[in-house]
Each structure stands twice: as C-alpha cells, then as structure tokens.
Length: 149
Image 1 (tube, helix red, strand yellow):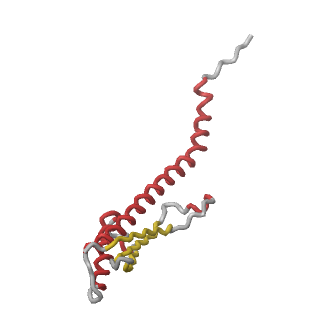
Image 2 (cartoon, helix red, strand yellow):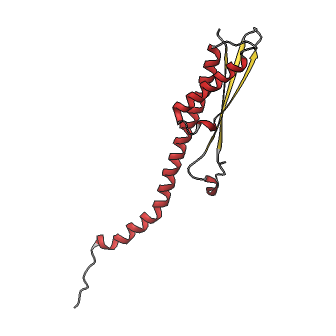
C-alpha cells in the first residue's frame, strides 16, 4: 500500500498570504493617502484661521483715520500674510487672499473684519472615488473684532 507524502501546512498557505496582501495593499495605500490629505487639510485650516486672527489683532491694536486707512489695511493684510508664512512657508503665501472691512457698531465703536481665503490642493484628486470633492478646496475664515484704541 502506497501512502502519498503530506504537504506541509505552511507551504500550502504561502500563496494565500500573497493573494491577501495583493488585495489589501491598494486599500492600505488609499487609507494612508486619505489620512495624509486630511492631516494637511486640518493643518492648513488652522493656519488660515490663525492668519485671519493675526490680521484682526493687528487691526484692533492700531487705530486708523480716513487718511491712514489704506496704510492700516496694508498692515492688516501683511500681518495675516506674515502669520501664514510662519505656518505654511513662503511659497504658498501668494495663494492667500485677505479682505479687510470696517464698520461702526451701535455704541459708535469701530470694528474690523478680516476674511482670509486659501485654496487647499489635495495630493490625490478624490473625485474618482465618488466623493466629488472639489480640487482645490476653498478655505475661508472670517474674524471680527472691536478696536480697543
């Protein structure tokens, strides 16, 4: 009577591991890229918020008159751009748009409103996944404060 030699258990599983890895690798890469884009988005969103706050802080600390409003507006814009430079570097600051508006409230106190806009570009164009995310994603933050001087 002939008995066939038994195959070792690890040898028969070698192909199954490779197949599982081949199926999971694209999913793992997609998850890593999504995590990177989300982290970059959160970082840039915070940077845009900080830029708007820095511009508004400059605006409330430096009073203006009708004769000095243009210089004051340029100073507010520059303060926001300087803050953005500290956060994301000087190469992307040209994409930051800063809008400064002033108003007077019911107590006859001046208010400054700084709006910072920044187009965030993802690493991957996510529209192929069915998410239909725009690329670039527009970020906009608005900060309003009352002048203290």
